[in-house]
Image (cartoon, rainbow, N blue to C red; front, side, top):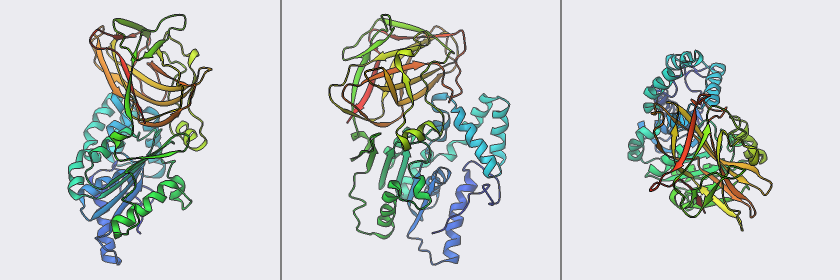
Length: 440
């Protein structure tokens, strides 16, 4: 086994080019070096990495057919979908990555340019530049070449990963045509596999090792017989599925008008149309997604979720919808979806959707969330709002119910909502508002 530091990091030469072509080409250079200086067998080459190394490994498998297997743990397949989801900059995550790059290495020209714009508040300029750099640095862009080379691809990630969230990985996994495996567990960036990286017992590495052995050596160890998709719930139960589409069946609930003293809408089986509900924008509520790299780690390591007292969420600045109580336990597996018509009063408005598992006292645990920013909208014009929340595997106890909250500010993200503006949610005739939750 050969390990090395990517260019620009630690004592490696060069500058950090954000997994650019030179960094990807270095993987082939390392393979060449191994062929020349060791007894390496180029028919048994694997590229394995965590985070940055995971993204580079996937990209290298598109360029070098000698790579027969890939282990990409807590990595990315789509940089923009990860760090600028739905046109909403993941502020805390980007700041953390820039800081880490400067602490552990030397930024190259690309990183220095992005960093300069970010630090002076030229976020639009930074986003534009990032979008130009991202395609060649995203495995999703070159997936046709990966599929042509047919490496065996092992992907693992955390449901609460605040840097490279799981849905961009599940989308990539679905498009792979060769041998593939996907493991998702609760935690934040790199926490599910962290102990294995330092030689301690670890479930992810326990699965990865026989996978590599099977596809590199042909060992008949049953690694190819296990279900390709493995999901671990917040109660530490693993469940296997033949593909991503099979993890859960969508169950649709329709949003009704928030009403009454609580100004809470329902999540019901029958479509409710003809209503609208306005909220003020630019003011935070008690609902948020937690702290990047901290909240997800607490969920994964200590089973401490991001919580909220749902009755205390200010309905002046948030839309809230509550579902019926579960009479028996249920497993939510897969990617929830939300569809609702929104009418902003400003040109740029950020919306943050949160799905909570709520007990009888109204205390909610965050199951999934997602940001979405409407840019350049026409004030007063209704816009259909349809998007996916992040993937999850969550066990809802009997006696609990689901609550959907949508507000306009989240400290983890660079929101665009402005104080003094508003947004209205509606359910027009012929286009009812709904929430789809996948149930195992």
